[in-house]
Length: 296
Image (cartoon, rainbow, N blue to C red; front, top):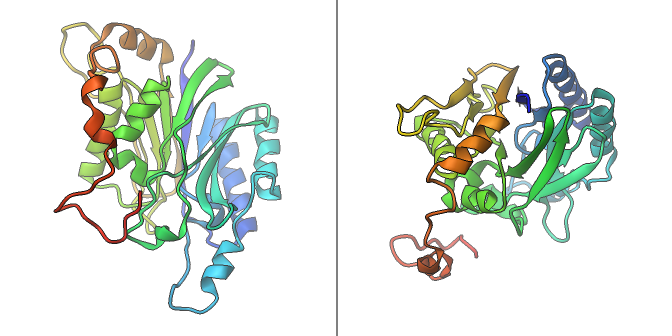
């Protein structure tokens, strides 16, 4: 297998102007394909530019919810046609219409224009305005057929990556590459945390953030292969880290190398003790972690 190239589409959102979001997103996808990308990854909730509503303004929440779209909306259909034209997979993000409150979702469109996976953010930020969203219900993995061969893909969205269980479940379900749409400040600690997700699960990870001044950019990708030689010296697994400006940043993953590494190294699933992990699924929350705005 040749390199799998993921384009991180680091942009500033267009807010409620869906036509502008569509036009700008298409232009960045075309740039990505011209650079040789196999997959284009949008930042979080691109269809509305990660914009929410003013809870103190009457009717604003209803206006915001009316912007939610389904996977068969012309906005998504446009990117399906574009993926087919460019022969490139596109992970497009949007405010998804749902029974009750909308969801924060990403749909992975393959290079034939078919939606092969839709994932909704599970760890919504309930301590903030994201309490207005319906959380997703499951972590899913799919097989994406690229020009370079098949790759198993999973998703985390923003806050999902701050819980080690998210990446761990995706690894257990077979993910080789985890894609992460994002919309928050990426400081040193969050970047190291994301790097750790790759290390502890032996997966490649790629994250697209909004450019400054909306967020601070620093879209990033890390390889899984920390020790290229058994018992040898570690290597820096950083593939690429963007600056703050709008641009397309290309991250290349050597899947053959990742797969060989996963077959021989100790992390992942071989030496876990799941029979001892029952505490991880207990719902009870004890002080000092009790939060009145949290649900389960």
